[in-house]
Amino acid sequence: MTDKDIYKNDDEGNQIEAATYNEKGSLRTKHIYQYDDKGNMIEDTCCNADGSLRARHIYRYDDRDNMIEAAKYNAGGVLADKDVYMYKYDAKGNEIERATYNEKGTLIKITTSSYTYYDTPAPLPAPDDKAK
Image 1 (cartoon, rainbow, N blue to C red):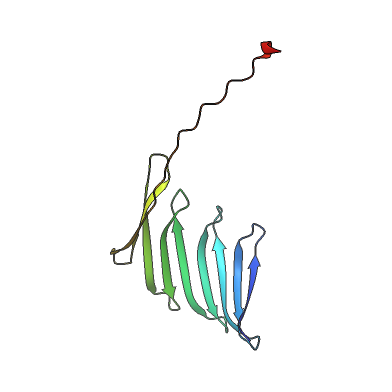
Image 2 (cartoon, one colour; image 1 turned 90 degrees about the vertical axis):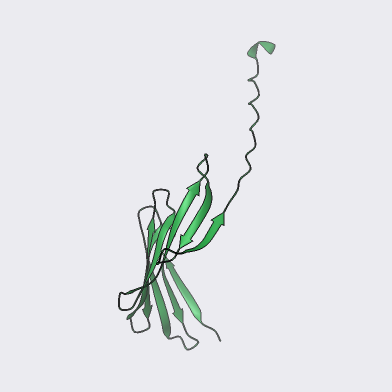
């Protein structure tokens, strides 16, 4: 037998809880998720079976709802890991680059995207009512 995961969602469809149970049906871990008004996950609290804090993840977003920071804190509230994300956009507002930095400010990854834009054809003229 394997572990069993049970999920709960809020009225907006956001997952607000995830609990993992072992093969005997005992709780192993529980995650509790919080969201901002825009539906972005802002916190993931992970608890042990006894309810004690295991870890907490805090997420921050920019005005485009892109994640700009993901920080992980241990059970004692000490920062264990942090990634910072920086974005570049093209003239049409599409993301073309995402740079990921660690908590020391060291670049650890760059993800690039490219787009091909096609000219849209001019709309057809409206039918002439006089042609009836």
